[in-house]
Length: 472
Image (cartoon, rainbow, N blue to C red):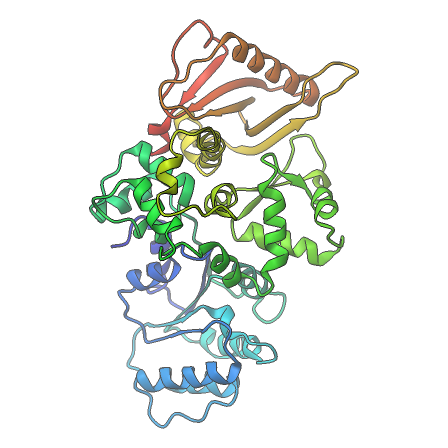
């Protein structure tokens, strides 16, 4: 059963009604449901479908492509010694099909592009020189190696430049979509438990699909992540190895960012990781950002070169906090409940959940239709002026003259603002207004799990958002 994805499904189905052939690229991180979306939308009714194989030579890929053509009914398939012949045979097969739209689906496209195979050149020729001139081809390509998809297809500077009709970036599920997925599978969890699951798995549908009925969430996390035979026991290594040919350079950046909640600048990453300051390092950062593992965010009022990079992938953050070098048996997560390390992690992980649900926060604030920009902001302590350092993970700069300063707090009960914390909020807002010299009104917004205790110290709060709002 396909959950959500209404916009993406509409694009795929609309392609069947267009007058001319359509070229659609679908990309996103591993396990996010790209292939499932395409197969469910088209009901597996493909004229031709082929899936590339990881770490396979061009000769073997071509042999498998030849077998696929035979399995689809093409007779007397020529020996495929290169991709020019392979695409030639695909054209012949398509020409033999009856009238009507023909959906051609090539899955895991990056794996088909072996070194010196000439695959991309022949793909360009197939589309530009043949399929695009027809009216009956819907050509859908897909791949988990997001950086390859972006560089070679989406931002191609050669024959495929501006040739795509649609590109679909498949994002992880929201909290609400995860809830819908669980309901469809008969898995019963409270919204607080779904939140904790999201803080571990993020919105990756595959991870959620592994949860079984009848067990608690902590039992399932132990079974999937900490048991040696668990489906996700080796997920971290498999995740990065499947996306990048040389994952060590990428995981080195990830490891550095995992140690710094606020993030690091490009220069800080280069110095700490002893990277060379060149285009290849820039490419690593872009690749990680395209895959959704990190975010590059502007510091309001700062230059582009001061851009911060922050780790935002939930599973990766969970891995470095609790898994790397710390496997302690199959009941480890159940034993961690309520301990100081667990409580600290909950606070940090909840902030990341909020960053993935800015649209829901804006909806609660009634500004869904208002043009906004989202920032993070910080200023370092100043000994001369005795100004304290400030870190704000989410600022919503609104076109209606207001800046929402979002404070995100995880708690098991209603969150009670103390007198000291109220003073901290006042000082934080004053520091921000002074340093940025903003002319906008600055509002403090509290985003909590269970709402606020309305005591004597809530006067500074202009708006509230709680967990129920994040499920909208």
